[in-house]
Each structure stands twice: as structure tokens, then as C-alpha cells.
Length: 257
Image (cartoon, rainbow, N blue to C red; front, side):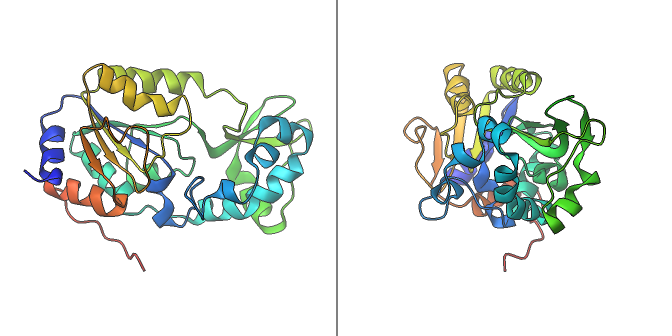
């Protein structure tokens, strides 16, 4: 049995299969990842200088100047076949949830319904002084156009996007739900993650310790390679649609040009 068919067999016979995704799932949607050699975002800047909560509180304009071009890429991005395949697997009842390190919302755009965003999202922003929460749609276009730092309309202080910066704790409720799915899963499909950022990087190992099978799809090596039940050193936009189609899903419509 070839690896695709073995993956399908594991997924079809699972009782609680879940996905775990990282930045590599969204690179074909035009969003750069963070750690790929030669192209990762963190090879160009020091993340603790531009994307830590300490730097944000000290000089929020530095964060927003760095984040502005990425914000436009995130805002304009559309789901690719990897997102679509995962949404199809969930719609078919095979995947019960997708835990994602991504903040781009592309899983939801593709149709996934149970998405656990452990690193936050860009749909809302919170005032760093009064802690009121606002939808980002009210100021995202202005920010992308003129670069003005978003300001709280109630108290006049800076609004911080609800994404997790270095030095911040992950959202407790989301992590608890993610850990619950990990404790219940018998198959975990890991896609496009370097598995270098704790505590999310520990989840495949925890699942396997509880008896789950791990299917790993990633272009670069990870610490789980030798432990994975199935390893695909390949692009997620090639492998995930093959798995979905072998499970009976239609081929996604997508122009890779």
C-alpha cells in the first residue's frame, strides 16, 4: 500500500482525526513563512525587536511599520488546495478539528468550521490601556493605505491586533480546547509546520504518546520525522489534495500560476 493509501486508510478508520497546521499551509496563498532557509521572515528581522510584546509596548510604531506589508498580504490572500482539502475532510466527517498556528483566517475562508487559532487572529484588536475589543475591519483599510497606528476610539491609546506576540501567553480557552482534541484524537495530520514553536510543537508527541498515529507533511525536516507513522517530505498543496481525493473528495479549483 502506497503512503497516500495508507494515510487514507488511517483517516477513514479513525474515530477522532484532527489537523495541525503551520505557515507552510499558506505559502501558496502568497503569505511568507517564518523559518524557511533563505526566505523565512525571521531571516530578515529580529522577531524580538519587531514582534515581541515588550517591543510593542515600547515602540508600537516599529511593529506596525514592519507589519503593514504583511497585513496587506494576509488581507488579500485566498485559500489554496491545502486549505480546501482540509475543509473537505472536515465536511466529510473525517477531521473533527484543525489546530492552526496561522493568523490568516484562510481555513475558515476555505470552509473549515472547527478551527482553533492558537496564535490568535486579525479579526479583532484590543486596546492596550482600557482593554476594549474592536473589529479590525473598522481600521484595516486605513492602516494599509496610510500606515497610521490604529487608535482606540474610547481612550485614545494604541490598539494591538489579537495575534500572539513573542512573550505573550497563548489564549487559554483555545489551548484548552486544542489539548482536549489532542487527548481524544487517534490520528493527527500535521501539515506545513516546522514544529519549532512551543507549546504547539509538543502536540504531535503528546498525541502519539496517547496512542495516536501521526501523518506528517512538510518540506523541511522536523523533530517528529523519525517518530511519524507516515512522513511526506513534500509540498502540502500536492499531498493534502491527493489524500482528500483518495477519500472521495473532488479536486480543488485553483490556479497555481
